[in-house]
Amino acid sequence: MRGPSPRFERAVRPPSRVAVYNECVNFFGHAVLAARTSPSDAFVLGAMLPDFASMLGARLPRTSHAELAAGVRFHHRSDDAFHGAPSFLAISREALQFLLERGMRKGSARAVAHVGVELELDRALSGDLHALARYRAALACVDDVAAEITWNDPTTSPRLVALCHSLFARGNSREEPTPELMAERLRRILEGRPRLRLDDAGQSVVREWIVAARPSIVSRAPTLVRELEQRLVT
Image (cartoon, rainbow, N blue to C red):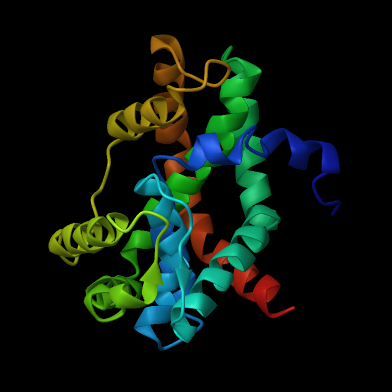
């Protein structure tokens, strides 16, 4: 079977990586992959660190900690693997078609077909109890390694610790956002981008897509993880 065309891959690529990732994103998905790669909690934390930096509105920090640094490098490798994985591209293609057929603007549809799919895959992976335990252990190790993370703004260090503590305090279960809440979240993420933002009608279409696509995304998530593992070792 023919793979997705380069034209399609460009179509589902987010128009602006910085704009799309400011508020969200799939840090748990990175933790899942990192936990399957290394027994080190610091490595798993490092794999989430670029997303945490974005959530804190900070530049990616430097670190002298070998396992943290390896985790950060793994984050970037897994991003590249993820965005070229056949399952991700197929789900994104289906999402883009669904949204465009219902009248959503192309820019908004492209963004949702990328970021929305990432968030839904992140949610689908939250049923992995072993990964949840490793995720929480990684969050807990921030107290041991925070001094080895150097930020441009020193006040970011205590904010990172507070973020990790907050995420840890949520317990062993991850939130189960309803389609309504996920659509609201996507609208908030895209709000600052006039060409991507969602209006009320667009938010309604996103909710409709989530309801329709969520079962398929959940069933395809294990296949995606296997694809990523294969891509990361080649």
